Image (cartoon, rainbow, N blue to C red; front, side, top):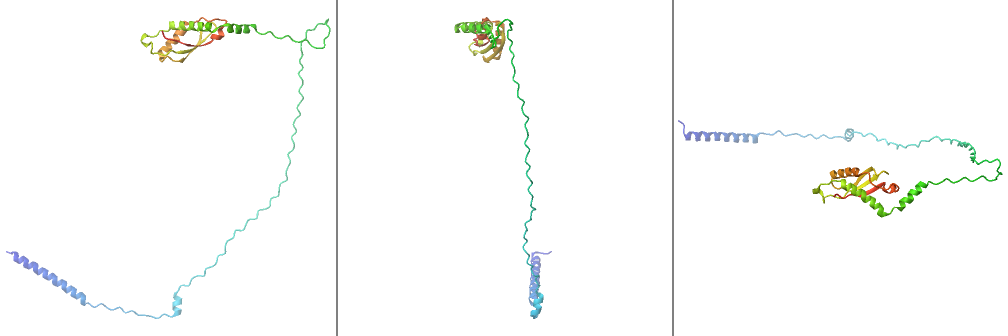
Length: 230
């Protein structure tokens, strides 16, 4: 059996052998002779040196390019042609309108140099009478008729008690016919409830025809009335 001494001896022997090989290799490399290099120097003459230099091509001087101006052909001026004056057609003289007035012809009446004057048309007395009647209506009388229309509508307008005091007083544009019937109705300011606005319109049509003076119809054709829910 091998023990530890044999292993150590073998290890030391291998290390020694490796060292011997390294020393022998280094000694060999130091004693190997390196062959000397011989450098030969050759003299070159001046003619050979000039022949070895490449000859450069002569540079040709380029002439500057000058753009010659083009000569344009002269244009002959065209003769001016004067426009011929256009002759306007002569306006034909307007014939004077001859107004023939029908005169009352009386063979026994003496001839007069001047024609008789026409009588002026009579003005429409009905229109002037209506304007005079409308002017005679006082403000208190107009307010009386408007208040009558207002009361007639408010009596037909049914508003729930729980909504009283919570609504606005609507403003209505009411147009009437000469008979007192309703021509058109338009709500200018709402009460705040669409349902109550529609019931107000129904009450207006139910309260018609309204009592208005026929001779003063022009004053009540268009009315602005504010209604109050009762």
